[in-house]
Picture 1: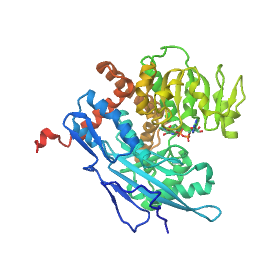
Picture 2 (picture 1 turned 30 degrees about the vertical axis):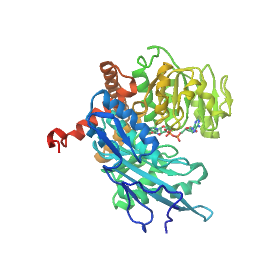
Picture 3 (picture 1 turned 90 degrees about the vertical axis):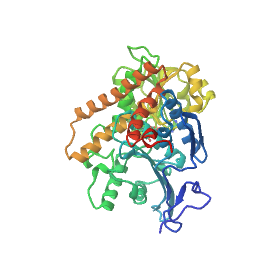
Picture 4 (picture 1 turned 120 degrees about the vertical axis):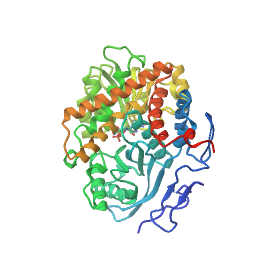
Length: 476
Ligand code: NAD
C-alpha cells in the first residue's frame, strides 16, 4: 500500500486547496482555479497585486510578469487569470529499493495554465525540488510556450530524489510510479511531460509505456523527449542547446556583443542543454573557455575541444577528467562564474545569481539563461547597473519545447518528420520569437526580458480575452 507523507514533511493545503480525500493514498491536493484568497487586484494597477499564500519563488517570478503587463497596460483580469495554477497534484511515489527496503518520495505535477492548449513541461528528479519550484517552473513554461507561439500551456513536474543514489531498476520504478500517481491529470490532450534535470530519453520510454498501460492505448504523443525508436524525434535532445545558440546569435547585437566574429563563452552545466549548446557554439566558431559541472570547473583560454570534453564526461562522469590542450581543472564548480568571457551561459539549476552581491563576481558582457530561472528578480537591477544584458530563459531555452511540439505533432500524424524539417522548424520558431522580442524592445524601449514577457502576455491575453472581458459582461 502506498504510504502517505508525514504531516511534518508535507506542506498543509492552503486555504484555497482541497485535500481531495484524507484516506486516499497518495494524498491529493487539488489547487482550485481562481482561489479567491490568493490575490486581490485594483483595476488597472498591477502594482497593487497582493499575494497571501503563494510560494516565494512563484511570487518573485510573477513580479516580472506584472511589470511587463504594466508597460503595455494589460487588463488586470488577464494578469489575474495567470496568477494561480489551474491544478497541482501532490503525491507520494512509493517504490521498493533493490535491497528490499521501502522508499517514499514526494512528487508533484502542476498544470499551470491551459489557455493556449494542453499543458507542457518537463519532469525533474532532484533532491531539492519542491511544490513552489514546480509551480514556478510551470508558470515559466506558460510564458515560454506563449512566446514561442506554440499551442501549449505550461506545466511541470518533479520528484524529490537524488537520481545518482538510485540504481537503473530503482529509477525505472520511480518513473513508472510517478506516472501511476499522476496519470489522472496527464494525457496527450491534457498535460504532456518531457525530460528535465536528471531525466532523459530512457525515463520518457518507461513513462510512456506505463501511461499507455493505464490508458489502454498506445499514445506516443503523451510524452515527448522519447527515444527515436519509440516515436521520439531525432533532434529533440540537442534542441534546447541548439535553440539557445540560435537565440544568442539573433540577439547578440542587442546583448552588447560584437556583431561578427567569435565570442568567448563560459558555461555552468554540461548536461542535456549545456553540451549541445557548446557543440553548436563551437561549430559556429566561438571559443568555450570554461565549463563547470557539479564536480568542478575545467578551463582553457585557447578553447576546450567539446567532442573530447563530452567523451571525458561520458566516460568518467566529470568535466574535470578532460585533459586536452592547456586545460586546467579545479574542484570548484563556482570558479566558472568569475571567468572573464563575452557570454556566461547558465545551463544547470535555478537561483544561481540571487542578488546584487552575486552579480559582483561576474566578469562577462552578457548572460544566456539556458537553465530555467538561474537569475532571480532581486539581481535584475544590479545586472542592469553592471551593463550585463541577459537573454532570458523563456527565449534562450525555448528550443526544447519547440521540438517537443514537433514530436507531439509527429505522434498525432503518425508520419515521421525528416531531420532537416526539424532543424528548419527550430530555426524558424526560435528566430521568429527573437524577432518579436527585438521589435518590442525597440517599440517600447524595454529590456530583453520585459519584451519577452510582453510578447508572451499579448498572446495569452488574446486567448483569455476571447472568452469575453469586463467590457462584454458589464461592471457587476
Ligand atoms: P542535466 O541534468 O542533463 O544537466 C545538468 C548539468 O548541471 C549537469 O552537467 C550537472 O553536473 C550540472 N550542475 C548541477 N549542479 C551544478 C553546480 N552547482 N555547478 C555547476 N554545474 C552543476 O539537465 P538539463 O536537462 O541539461 O537541464 C539544465 C537546465 O536547463 C535546467 O534548468 C532545465 O530546466 C533547463 N532546461 C532543459 C531543457 C532540456 O530539454 N533538457 C529544456 C529547457 C530548459
